Length: 349
Length: 269
Image 1 (cartoon, rainbow over the protein chains, first blue to last red):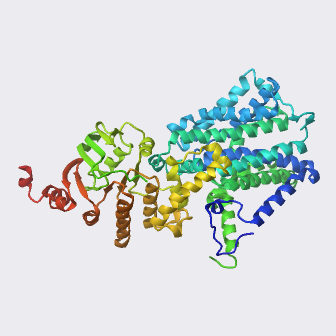
Image 2 (tube, helix red, strand yellow):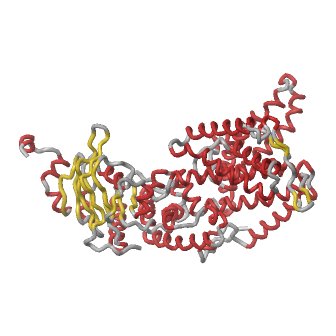
Image 3 (cartoon, rainbow over the protein chains, first blue to last red):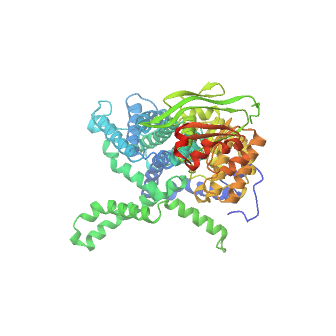
């Protein structure tokens, strides 16, 4: 998989490459091909699970950029997703635009709205900014609940996307919209964070004093991070609305935003693979808990209805606490250690 | 690289600068100049206002009155990042690196003002953004080579030793291609060998890159050896200026550093 020691890159292109060897390429292409055949042999359950997983990954990628890379902790991601979903729904249902136009527009509109969310970052940071983004969350959801155009508390119903007469009305069909978009967004995020803008984000996160002295306009880059992050949230929200075919404030609560932050912590802040680790870990855990909780209720009747209702959140809290204490850099860091040690095997260093 | 400074150019001109924090006067009616290519040392006892002066030059502090002109342009109402774009770079007394990035990325991040590709082309990567990365990578590799940082190129700076981090910080300041370099105690906390290395690098920068420098330092031996000229501060005002050999002979400087020998003598001044 990897190169034997003593092989060096001769050009900067090769040194910068992410996919480094021909075996890497083969592994990448083969796994992508296998992946795209999942709807053909996977069950409905698996496919719909992967769909929500992928949408969550898009949203958390955005959160990774603003919180993990730029260091501005945001609890507004669920609200931004809601806005993206609603924008897409309104554009398709009320203005008759096609999904293919509405989705990018929803992304851009949410991105612009995110500038409002990022505006307080000029004066406040850290903890206080996080609180401010909670305020943004509630204001946004209040607006969605009370505006005429967003259907008030009833919400909106959304049509499935279509190309010509082909309607993407099942989860298996939506899979082929969601997956390429997720891959594209991952590609873009990975490249963004390793070029000029990404380095500026990290500079703002790691040392805002030095960043200024090095010519980085702090406020501009914080706002840019919020824009990019909310663009991701908007796209994720739009996909989610068109997947579930309904848009309702109940789908995007503050709890969702907390789950996203938790996924980041478990996966590892400041790492794109970490997003995948975090989302998959937490979602799979949640799913296992969901399956296990009826049995637990059977075995331990004295627990009453508690396992079914509260076990998911309890497990989430425990996992989060364990990660914060034992591995604050997340699964991505563990993954790096594993890669490094397997590269050196059988030697210790 | 900008080598156009002739020796007679006025790089930086500070005129009657006043900075106070409440009742405390940090800088008191300070005047000095940096002439082309010179290595100007600013020395003085603790709390003399040396770092405050640097903070004024790069825009962290707003002086209450006075002007700072860089290449004939008034810079003190500007934002720090705008001043950086004009070509003022600096290092810090307590190392201020981007701890999560490796050495290479730290230096690349300093190329920020010279790079142009934004978020969109950056996220596509292949094409313009990659060409730009490679172009600037070459500049950065030159600096890595110059500062002998090759072995740690891809190490995260948080894991490096103090002396090496100091060197990385100098490298980051150099990567900006500055027209004026401010060094805030580049040798603080180093042993003799590391100091000698650092002095050699600073002299090489002056010699090869011809960047005018302001160096704030406590170590008089170092200043004597490498500075062209020294300005001595005490309680925010300039008490002496001249070649390092001259200022250490100056009685007011000796007083400021060693205390007053005789109360009556000084009060009659």
